[in-house]
Amino acid sequence: MAELWKSLPSWVRNIVVPILALIVAWKLLWVVVGVVSSLIGFLINVLLLVGIAAAVVILVKKAAKN
Image 1 (tube, rainbow, N blue to C red):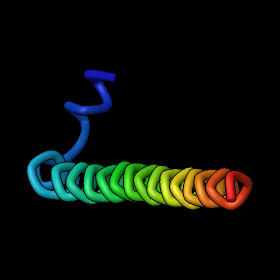
Image 2 (cartoon, helix red, strand yellow):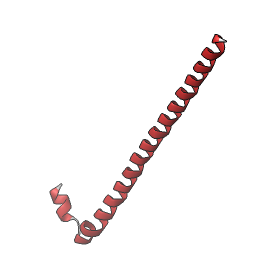
Image 3 (cartoon, rainbow, N blue to C red):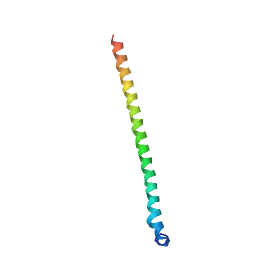
Image 4 (tube, one colour):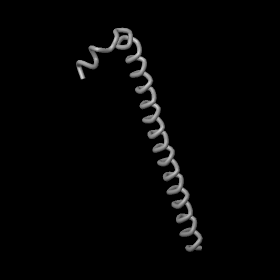
C-alpha cells in the first residue's frame, strides 16, 4: 500500500485524495444524521401512540365507573 501511495503524483496525494476523503466523510455524516433523525421520529411516533393508548384506557376506566 505504501508503494501505491508513493507512486501517486504529488498533486493527487495533496489535492485529489483529501477532496475525496472530504466527500466520503460528508456522505457518511449525512447517513448518520439520517439514521439518527429517523430513529428520533420513530421514538416520537411510539411515544404519541403510547400516550393516546393511555388516554383511551383512562377514559374507558372513567366511563366504566359511572
